[in-house]
Length: 178
Image (cartoon, rainbow, N blue to C red):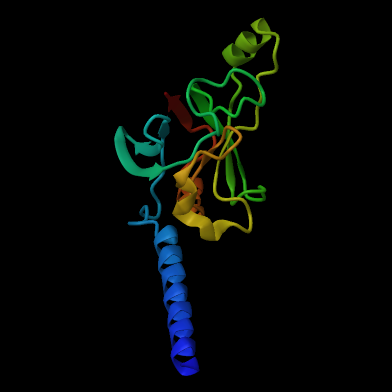
């Protein structure tokens, strides 16, 4: 009887380990990689589709599924509202030492965003980024897409962030659509 119970426990542990391994492999598989040397000249984020697209010369180079701010519907209205902004911006800078796996700073708030916030007597917020996973949590991979979890940023997996970071120079326009 004991041998049978021990065998069942051993089988369950082995099966559980295989299942966890399979989930982690799936979560971290990023599909067909973006070809080396391709440079994006435009980024479009579709909030309603949770999708980021890199473009070059009017052609989509690659699409990525994303997570957004915890309160994703509607434009960013004020600091702390957990919304991802909507509008036309640009990539201001690359941060290789972010708290997340690399980051591209988005030029939010624009002058129009600051004026609209001032009319509402609120701060517009800032530090909107495209970034990977929080440092140390990269194994979560694609599982992060199950919910919107950022404070207003646009999040992708770490391997995807490597591609986007490499292919997107400072000054690249980014359009964030509803």
